[in-house]
Image (cartoon, rainbow, N blue to C red; front, side):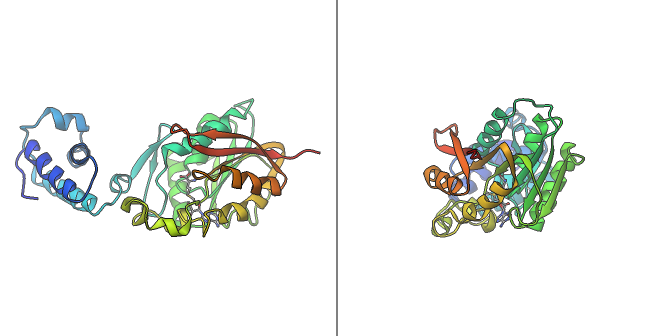
Length: 287
Ligand SMILES: C[S@@+](CC[C@H](N)C(=O)[O-])C[C@H]1O[C@@H](n2cnc3c(N)ncnc32)[C@H](O)[C@@H]1O
């Protein structure tokens, strides 16, 4: 990219570099990156094409464009992503929260009759903490525990809890699913890695190269983590309480069978906004 003078020139150069790197919407992304480099809303960038960039703005934009052209995800470049209208810190150690996972939050909330009740929540494979913290934002009397195998992810989740003002109601620990945890819990959520290991490499470069493998790969058939965590869910859930588990496209029936095999009766399947069966709601079977 040549050193651009005005915003219009900078956008042209950035969009060209991004297009050459195979980015789908290069002009739109060029605006986003320019907005970030100039510390202004992308709309402001569009409205002032004649404005000259300062040297520091030019440098910041050039770095962002170079990293994005290597297909580094925008959330990691900006260090944050919105989920459930809350801002989450994102690093290379955590999965970027996906809009599809808001289905888990919606389904979990739908099963809570009293949003002020002193509920105990558990989030297995917490990552950024997005599921647990979104739930705490809606359930004022609740306390929650988030668990992740990755100490670096736990650190990010703790930072998010503090930044969002939930540090007094959210605890995080490093661990292997529910091992060593004592229940019972009123609500358990989990979004485990569920991509079949052979499919990870063929995901888009932003995911395959930059998101943690441990957050993606679910073993040969994608279901290893469900087999490992469902017995913990069954042990830790209060009688009559609910578990909400995210699943990959086409996995609902097989994960339902795993839940049922451990005495968890799948009561509903919730689709995401694209109509894909995205999460299972299950409750302990009562004889
Ligand atoms: C698909 S990500 C979900 C992250 C977050 N809950 C979300 O919805 O965005 C799965 C998470 O499970 C964690 N994980 C993988 N294996 C685990 C294990 N054995 N015990 C606990 N967490 C695990 C990963 O580190 C990753 O943060």
